[in-house]
Image (cartoon, rainbow, N blue to C red):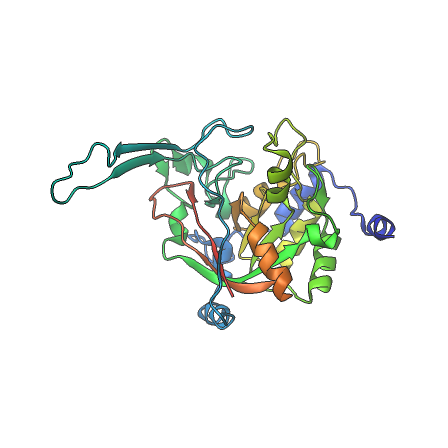
Length: 318
């Protein structure tokens, strides 16, 4: 029965020209001024932040970050480098002594929970608000860097539990999520995504990884995620930040010539920051147990001047 319903909800098949038209017709370039570098973060007003804090009742805190990956994995050829520079086995036992360590991170990719800056995605030589891609140089981003979030990002978070909607533990790699799925999830969960929200899309990637192991999303079947017909919906709802336990895009995209249309259009044209590789399994359990899919959401990127991304430990608080 569910399959029959889903067949009726299937999206219109899009081609690259459709994606280009969405980007052009719904562009947010200039919406908040010609010099703006915050993009859809401008949707988050003082009133919206205050309302988000009012959602906290018993102060349950849930991290939405994966552990930093320090071992090579399929799809993660550049793990975090972590070195202990001084351990207890080398420190003095006389008086005060310290342990010391060092780590380095390739923020982007398919394994580290990170926030993409608006300088991350270029579309036909331009990034958000029409800035030229040459503004990102070997010494960093002169425009649209991760510093747009330097004071932290606080708003209402909303989880749309798509795996739960489809009554499966996880969506198989390459499964597209259509606009109609988002709207059906809203109805099922009794919630509506609105302007200024931080929208999280749950596909069950964490459970699949635990059950069958890591896989290379570029060569091993892809990732479940949003199909490009969701783009106008994201724009119309005024989503401030988009996050997913995948990378938001369905991979492969199903659109020839448009490899990651969600990243391209949402970041470069709508000005929506994207959180990739979130851990949403514990948050999903908490939401299901409470029958509550909204919460206060806190996101604090590192103050990395000229950075194109930042590792993050997003927090949902009930």
